[in-house]
Image 1 (cartoon, rainbow, N blue to C red):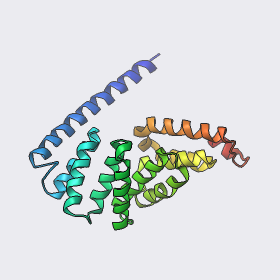
Image 2: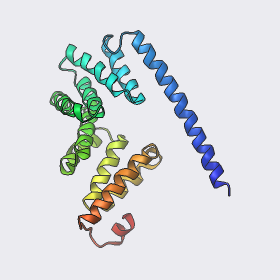
Image 3: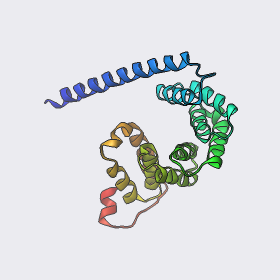
Length: 215
């Protein structure tokens, strides 16, 4: 009988934390704009402004800030990666610009933790375009460079589930533990789609107990 009340209490706590976080991010955005972002300011100001506005959902502002950076320095791999990520989030019209930016970023740097951002964004783009086979490699590389990239782990797990690698998918998601909770909605959407495709396409996995349990 207490379950509905505890659930409501937790939801209220989450809402309060999110409201406080957005207020803090909004304050940070105002500060960065006073320092010249998005049209000006030094590199660190623009990068941080881009990250803050992305978290607030203002990908267009983040994109504008990164365009400023790459215009200044065409060899800034992180700026290209952030530009690509935000351009893609701005909708299909900006996807070609996003893809171009991600490729430029990876041409400059494909081995650092910053490169994981570009690989993850590229994998997400391919996955959302239905290019599932192409999405596997960049997501795998993103996780190799940044093992804590939760979204990349979930997206790759969904691709594995779609292809019948059920045990790999389940193991990856289980290993995330509590870190996966903030991605709960994304996980549900991607897995629901992946498992439906697995069944509709008539795919199969090896007839072993652990595979059935994972499924």
